[in-house]
Length: 186
Image (cartoon, rainbow, N blue to C red; front, side):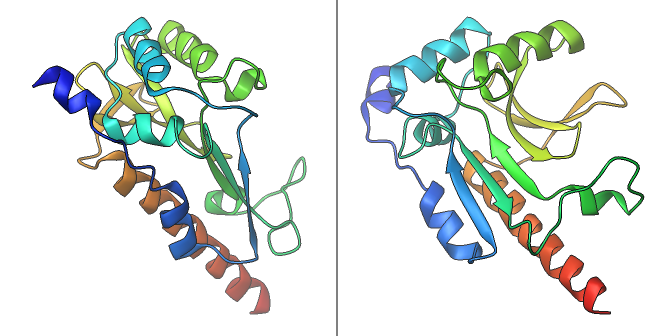
């Protein structure tokens, strides 16, 4: 069963999910140029002792090898030093990490995984992040998706697969944008 399950076609649902939720107030950026092969993504997981589920492999070896979704600065101005506001107002985007080594260091899955494991002591790899939030969403050795709480240093199962987690984060970002617009119109 192992070789057969890995041989099936992986379905990248990134654009389907984004298309359901975002509008012209958001911009999607691919992380890096080029493509990642599914085998390379799986090997990267093995290197760090985690098992990337097929959904993550599909996302990272799909149309974009990782994605950044940002709210428009016209709708959601970026926080400035010393700004005071509710925490959620600093969360203006979400991004996955990329297996491409040609990307910026902060986007690279290998470097983020190495640093996360060294700092936290957990055998897990970050795969998704809210911009402005120190917490991360990770994968463990069993392919489970977990929320990492940077203050407590703990991992909590999400009970979601990657596509549900990605959709939740995109939907919550859109909801935060709506809330910000309502509060500013006030």
